[in-house]
Length: 480
Image (cartoon, rainbow, N blue to C red; front, side, top):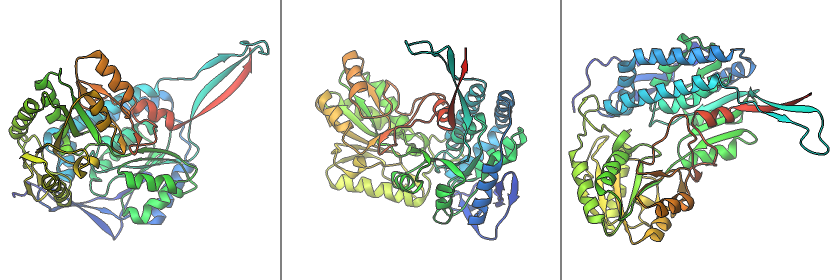
C-alpha cells in the first residue's frame, strides 16, 4: 500500500494546565492504512496525573457567561479556519476516510455552537411558597454551580474530535475544570483542540490533556479525592470497571450499542436499504450508534437484501486520504481480524455471505450477511465494524423480541408508515432512542443521548444533559 505524502513524525507533549510537558517514555501513534508511525505522545506518570488534578481542583474559574460564550464561539471560528488540517489529522490517526473526518469536524463545530448558546442560558427556577395552608411569604430559587472538584474525561478512538468535544465544551460552558485522557490510539486531535481553546482565551487550568498507559494512570483518575465526576465513553467491560472503582463519584458512562434497524413489510424498501448502508458503513462502522443488526420482515427481505448488496458494492473503500473514498480502514489490523473471525463463525453456523469479508491489513470490506440467527455472536455481541447482518422475522412481536434480545439498549431505527407500529416500537423497545425512518445515530448535538442496560446507566449526554450532570443545583430562599 502506498505511504501518505509529507508525513513527518511529530513528537507531542502533555498539556498540564497549558504547560507543555515531555517525557522520555512515549507511545507511538500509527496510521492504520500503512502501519507507519506518524507521531509519539508522552506516557504520563502518576505524578503528572496528580499534578493536573490538583491544579484543576484548586483553580476557581470566574468567567462570566458571556466570556464562556465568546471562548466557545471563538474556538469554533478557529476550527473552521483549520478544517483541512484537523480533518487530515483525524484521518491519519484513525484511518477514517476524509469524507468522515470532514463530517466529524462539522459536528464538532455544532457542539461548540450549542454549548456557547447554553452558556448564556440561566435555567434557574423560582417557586412561590404560599401554595399550601402552611405556606409562608417566601420564594425558593435554584441555581447551578460548577463542581467543587475536577472532572475526569476518558474518551475512545472512534471519534477523535467529537467524543472529546462533547465532554470539553459543556465543561467550559459550566465553568468547570477537566482533565482529559484521550485514547492512546487517537490522541493527536485532542491536543489540537486544547491548543485552539487556549488560543480562544480559555484559562489553561480549566483543561489539561494527558496521554499514557491506562493500566498505569487510569485508577488515579478514577479514585483521586480531587475528582468529583468521571465521564467515560467506551466499552462495556471498562465501563463496569469504572463503575466499581470510582466509588461515590458522579459517573456518566456511555458504553456499547447493538442497534437494530427494523424494516416492516409496509416500509419504503429503497429508503430502508439506503439508511441501512449509510448507518452500517459510515465511520467504518465504528460508532456506538451504527446499525449492528438489520431485522427485516420476511415478506420484503429478498428485495431489501438485493438493494443492500447493490448499495454496499457501490461503496468505494481504500486509501483514507483519497477524497473519493466512502470508507477508510478500521482502527487497526487486530480489529479487522476480529471482524473477519466473527463473520466466518456466522458463515460456519449457516449464515450466507453475500459480499465483503475481505481483509487487507486494517482495511476490511463492507460486508453483508443474510440468514443470520439472533443467537450468533456477530449479532449477540457488538460487532464494531462495517458488517451488515440481516435477520428475518415474521411479525412485529417477533421483531420486538429479537430487538430486545441482547444485553444492549442504546438506540434503534424503524422503517414503517403505520402509526400503530411506530407507537409499539417507541413504547416497547428497550433502548434510549427510537428513530423513525432514520438511522439509529441521528440526533442533534444538543439533545439528550444515551442508553440503558449494558449501554449505560440511563444518564444522558448531549450538551443539555451534560450541563446538568456537570453542575450542582443549589437552592436558596428569601422572604417575599
